[in-house]
Image 1 (cartoon, rainbow, N blue to C red):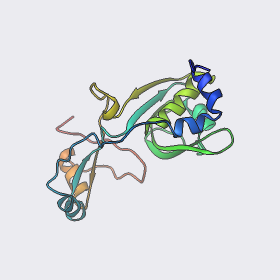
Image 2: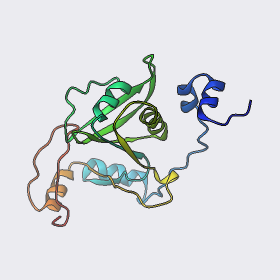
Image 3: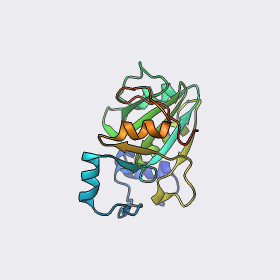
Length: 193
């Protein structure tokens, strides 16, 4: 039988989770060249001063928005969405209808009805399948990782870590920054913006 549709492929394989999880992605070469002198210097800076991580290119961003965003997530994830509110991040674990693990990701709640899920392509595919075939009033936008994206990124993500990180961020902000808790988001100015 010639496979012409996704339904044909699922019928031939019998298990969409297995099909997605074992999809031939090819060899993985990290898409960003190293910008540091050597690994030891980077680790020492992380421990004794601060480092700037550019995390903009190695993962896929999947933004989901609409009145059914929370419902979709409650249907496909094992996490409770009871504390679902703006400016919280959480690790989210996706499972199939039988409760078997599919994938996990980091989810940033941008608005009451808008999330950005930073993940691998399998997570995006799993969610997009449910968006396309479920009864959810949501839209989604994908900003693929650099390996799969030949254009310009829609968003960028940086991380500052180390004992001097907070002082560096306050200098960049032009003043004190409100202290925020684990997996919470805050806002700072960069060069007066």
